Image 1 (tube, rainbow, N blue to C red):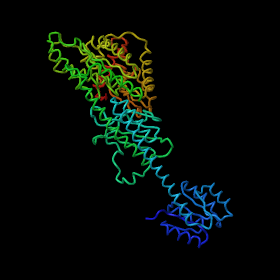
Image 2: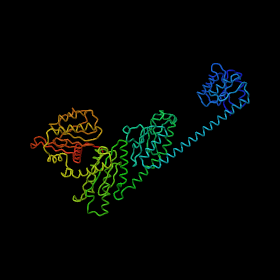
Image 3: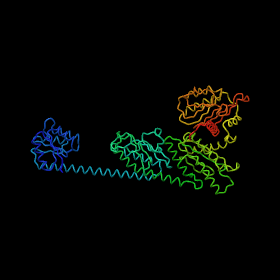
Image 4: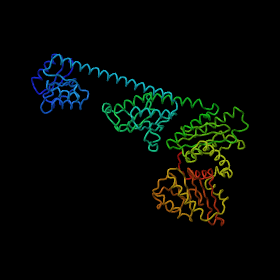
Length: 602
């Protein structure tokens, strides 16, 4: 093995032969070039430890060659050779970056000493660089494990997710990051939990499937290792299970992510997977330890803690959630023994739980009251779940088996974030108010629970009062404007204008043609449906609702309103019944929804 590789450059053939022979005898691997251009071509193809060049050469002299070499490789060792009269030129070459110079005629000992000194310095420099790289790598590993300690010490999923995104951005120099994490209860799919940088939650999917595209390893791993990309997708696994998925973007220097970034992200992801697995395991143990032993529902302390986290998440990501308050009056039949009362509470929680989704949370508050958290649920979805829970309880053997005098009444109230309030205290206060409204609602005082829509209309019109003739048209216009003003909010609107208002109502619906709205609009009218084609309206015949009484029923995120108008000629009266009683409007809207067979998702 040669001691080093030398490139000797001189325009004189005898000098090249002399240097090549002398250095070969000393054990060096030597190549020669007759000009600066040829030397540069050699340097493009191969690496040399030292370049030995004459200063005086035609076309490109030694000084220019030194300058060109330094531009290409700043660490290249260069020795210039000059005559005694060219010392100033040699000094100028040193200023350009030459490492040493020798005078002609070259002395074997001086040349050997110069080369050995340069090679020794080169070895020391490479050793220093290696040690620095090892130190930097060690510091990087130490820093990584310090962050890992912080990760595994964080058992709350939301703060942990923030730390993981921050750590991945630091490792890859990314300015933006998004993280989706598996659910605590093992439900398939990943949910959005953390954002960082120039990312808007409204632009990101709230959930992604666990088998999201791009998670499988590419077939050609060699080409993938060298590939670059403007975005970096990082799956986070533990024990073979996908626990999270991160997407990184906007690298700090404006370049694309490369194999080094991918390797750094994957190393950090191994630690993140362990931390997420620990957090999910802790959340599972915590949820089991915070259940009431008698009812099986969660305790109030745990419920409030989860609720505060849900509020922070909804506030940050612009999402919604709803709260339900369930009250049994009385809490349990008075003739039950203590053990039987505990069993009764357990059975109530069991029946309510069967009506809920896997993401919903039920907690006992005492005194026959239960609180329910419904994540990602708007006011209409909460109303659907209210009715589902009420039916599950009232039709259960638990209550059906009790005599009516001792059978508890089921009261349910709902409030939604952010439509109703943005503070927990305000939401709870509103729930108390609405529970009282449920208690005093005409639905209960008139016994409308089991009535059809047509029967409910007949009972309510008995309380109709005289009203201005323009009121129905004014209300119809206001409600249609409200639907247009709330295009992103779900709602139910049923319109039966009758002969007198059919024209103005159809004109108002025509204005909604092409408008983006999430409100289900149903027009109950005998008029032709073709003119409303393309508008967000479903036309049905009055025969399907069982009455030809003109009415308007609107239930949505904000307002709830119902108006019933006696038909002209019905006893000579033109009275109107109208109400903003939310419980009553909800009853009418869902009776219509059921009679018409319209599915409404929670």
